[in-house]
Length: 375
Ligand SMILES: Cc1cc2nc3c(=O)[nH]c(=O)nc-3n(C[C@H](O)[C@H](O)[C@H](O)COP(=O)(O)O)c2cc1C
Image (cartoon, rainbow, N blue to C red):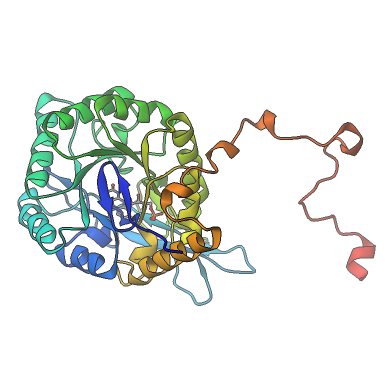
């Protein structure tokens, strides 16, 4: 049976539904070219802004790892560990728009059939800031960018009118999206922060402003851990740390919960899912909940910077899974588990006879008795 990996999302044809998300894997022309050669269906550029950016001294990203059979969770490199998450406090691209513009053009010329999404970000406090959004959008689409992703979700922002601070305000989200829509000839995707009480409200603001899709999740606000020996944060500059973003395996279930809220509230809208994807089994969750594309960052960063093995495995996994379930296209399985998420009260309870009032302690280790320890 012939399976078809190609899909249409926000009116754009993707050879496959897998994208590299806006992050270090997409921060340069050479990386993006390599990513397309490796097979990624699309790429979202590292976020481009108009304000000059200077990153913190020292590393911008580290990886938190767990040790099997112990409770140790640490960024220290050590053998035999499993990835728990990435933690970063990297800002948007430190390259100016002028640097990006010719590169977007060259990338599109070299790979006309691949989808290049330009991630952009400006402020929202003044009309001038709104014009910055428009300038960024116009410059990128004029070079052939296929879509624009609005970064309304960067978690490390001191400015009240930028990044995830916009993403926490449905009114501002609408205003910014509308300002971009006034100049956009290509679809607009709004990348929202997961750090709000009800992401459905913010998504409503984005759709009202003219977004064709919502992307979720950016990283989750978080801190690195303190080293118990030195009493220093595992990542710090001069002993100081600031809130940064958690990505990778740890956020997969968290991000799925956000996506489920979104796709249930807007079953007919388009969603691009991100968070903790390293294999097709992970990506499948997002598709079953209703996403039309998915994006990857942490897993790609750890695989030759742009994830050649990750994309090969995603494509092979999608093919194999579709053949096994006799699906011919993504439309056959997109959203088919969306209605399995229900209010807690709708989950069946045991009948009265079988219910022991919660004293079963099911799932917890039994207290040790003389009998169990002697065995
Ligand atoms: C080092 C680093 C830099 C990032 N920079 C950006 C960025 O510039 N713009 C953006 O929208 N998201 C950025 N992200 C967020 C990722 O695109 C992605 O949403 C997040 O890492 C979750 O995906 P993952 O679990 O696959 O890592 C960054 C993530 C990391 C780890």
